[in-house]
Amino acid sequence: MQTRLLEIQNIYKRFNKGEVVALNNVSLGLEKGKILAIVGESGSGKTTLIRLITGLEVLDEGKIILNDKVVSSNQIFIAPQHRNVGMVFQDYALFPHLTIFKNIAYGISKHPNKKERVKEVLELVGLTGMEKRYPHELSGGQQQRVALARAIAPNPELLILDEPFSNLDVILRNQLRQDIVSILKQTNTTAIFVTHDIKDALEVSDEILVLQNGNVSQQGNTQEVYKNPKGAYVELLFENV
Image: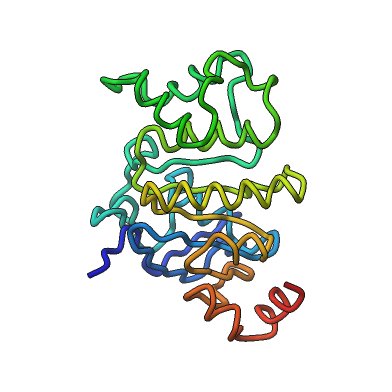
């Protein structure tokens, strides 16, 4: 029996004193070990949704449950640092003045086997032997791998990747896309990919959630959504893939 690691129930988020509805009655469930792609145009609500999941925003209504624990509701708010959610940012967000080792070790400073864990994740992302280098000495693809290593080092319950391939050229993004999916599956990591690139979404995800103006246009198994898009908006997203 599959277990839902993440469950979002009827969440709403408004800005500008309620005048702008960023998310309107959004619900979803994500099983442990699965990869979900959240797609939609700019302004669809993708960023707001992941900020609510990580705890960087407070919802107005609804409930977010992570690993059977309510982390956000009208009565409950668990701070981001206590949610055990990892994040890989679009711009990598590496510390330029720290070595690769120290960048990865930053979030696991209290880990009893810190050196071994850093070595382990570097091997996992294919960067063994680069501990003493600095971010500027690495290529864009290598920097993205370091960002991934840093995010998975603390063993997060959920990993969120925000437009992880947008700064890479086509050849590099295709290779890195395959490698990252392999790493996530190998470690049985539950993950959310946020992207506006439908090809990326199809290649990496088990499930897709399509957002439009804060509303869920369609969600479900990736291949089912691809083969049977519902509504003009979803059809338009997938027609040129």
